[in-house]
Length: 274
Ligand code: NDP
Image 1: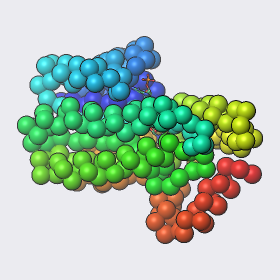
Image 2: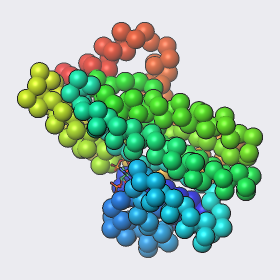
Image 3: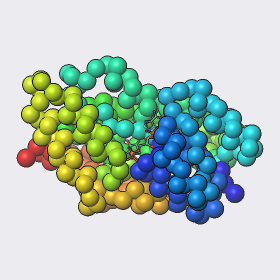
Image 4: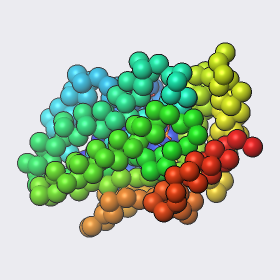
């Protein structure tokens, strides 16, 4: 039975992935701060654990518990994250640091903790939830994009570092997914603009996201579909390095490579400001 640790499993993509993998015979440890939200996952055999990915001690104790109980760890799904949207001029550097700690350093922290065991096993998979936002920058997406661009580079580095030890790394680049993420990003954005010259646009863009994240659409995917991609990345003999979830996501990544920067700026702004 393959042993999996998922971060950010109390909601959205992490929650759906924990459920799917447990239903398919994996031994799943589901980590998040809101342990109570993971209670229903116990019905599928998931083991919820308290995990604040910014807390070195908590992270270490989770990995030690898994090794003590299971004697191995096959998959780390680095998924915890949130969207700290807002104009760079306004967002405090304390908040920026928090964004980078949760979205970027946690990927390194969790990977450092599991890698010695994966190396000893001579096999293992690390899967990281990045975003299309790790390739293209949306208007007023600020530090979120800094974090996801960094996650892309960090995952590239880990992949190359550990390739000789039988460990494979895959990056998931979803576009919109119907989770708590949308409302959290919109709240950050609106709050960051309050009583400043950015008030009107931040409110406008926050409302655009609130509307967009109300229901599934061609731009907002079901988290269950991301869980299926994660399962595919775990089970493929030769997993892809990058997985995008939808046609618009694939097009965005392609455009980020081919389109001139000023053209991209215009498209990204016009998408969210009507
Ligand atoms: P949700 O807000 O639904 O879930 C986020 C998860 O991250 C929660 O389980 C939350 O758990 C956890 N989390 C946040 N902060 C911490 C922390 N300090 N320690 C541990 N866990 C934490 O959003 P998604 O499921 O959408 O987000 C999952 C990933 O997908 C994120 O990395 C996000 O950036 C990325 N993504 C999302 C997209 C979307 O449109 N939804 C698109 C592209 C990428 P808790 O608060 O209980 O700790």
